[in-house]
Image 1 (cartoon, rainbow, N blue to C red):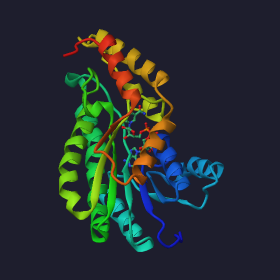
Image 2 (cartoon, rainbow, N blue to C red; image 1 turned 90 degrees about the horizontal axis):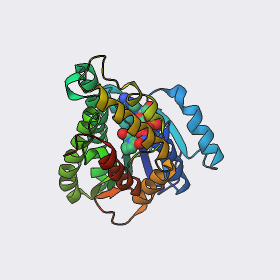
Image 3 (cartoon, rainbow, N blue to C red; image 1 turned 135 degrees about the vertical axis):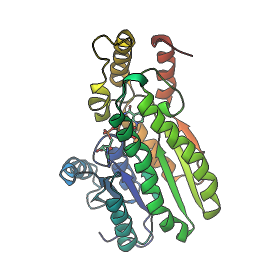
Amino acid sequence: MKTMQGEPVALVTGGSSGFGLLTAVELARRGFAVIAGIRRMEAQAGLMDAAAEAGVQGKIVAVRLDVTDPAGVADAAAYIRRQYGRLDVLVNNAGTAYGGFVEEVPAAIWQEQMDTNFHGMVRVTQAVLPIMRERGKGRIIQMSSISGRIGFPGYAPYASSKFAMEGFSECLALEAKPFGIDVVLVEPGAYGTPIWDKGFAQMSAPEGSPYRAMMDKVLAFSRKSARQGGDPKEVAELVARIACMKRPAFRYALPGSTRLTLRAKAILPGRL
Ligand code: NAD
């Protein structure tokens, strides 16, 4: 893709659906050349349709990017360096969401959750940091969650990955600042995106589990939260606004987060 001289460049991971797709479009509308990292290239059709609808076709290019694949991440970073020679904004958005009670979550789920949401995010960040550092300029926007700040019963795998992201971000913000790179955390509450139809949807407490009754409440709460959550566009708009700000704050919690927390306090058992 040819970019205009001086056009800022953004990479959005998990760019084929939900917040990632909407953010890619919103950034393109604000004048960024957008690279949407996509795990499976077949998934790019929806993104390209959305780009066409918003009148930004040609401003978004999809590249194959599975954040759990080290070689693929290195290839994507090399492509950005070769093709654009700069990266102004990275949105670490790719993620999965698994729930379950600590005693009952299988090792493979803990592993997959951390591999994607934490190690994948670290991998992409490490791969592109040199591109930003060499230009003395860059912004890394971390799609965390209200679950990166507050624990809920049944959310330990997901919350662990987002708490890890937050700790990583606090350290990186201090390390990268002298190189002109800032790090910003975004903490949405519940929004009805496809993420709720995957990992969380498979949450269960097996027959005879001591957590069964709690799981029923957690599931009811989660479904209600996803149904009643805000419009995912408000998250994309916030991320795009942060990308354009002169001096963003370190952390942005969306109003939906506060509503969710208050509801959770009222609904969920086992609160601290
Ligand atoms: P989503 O499922 O539409 O988006 C997640 C994206 O990540 C998908 O496009 C998926 O293909 C991609 N992805 C998953 N594994 C990947 C991998 N290994 N490599 C590359 N891409 C991968 O749901 P969403 O709600 O838009 O989620 C985006 C981010 O927002 C996630 O990090 C999620 O944790 C966070 N978040 C979502 C909510 C919510 O309620 N929807 C709330 C807070 C935070």
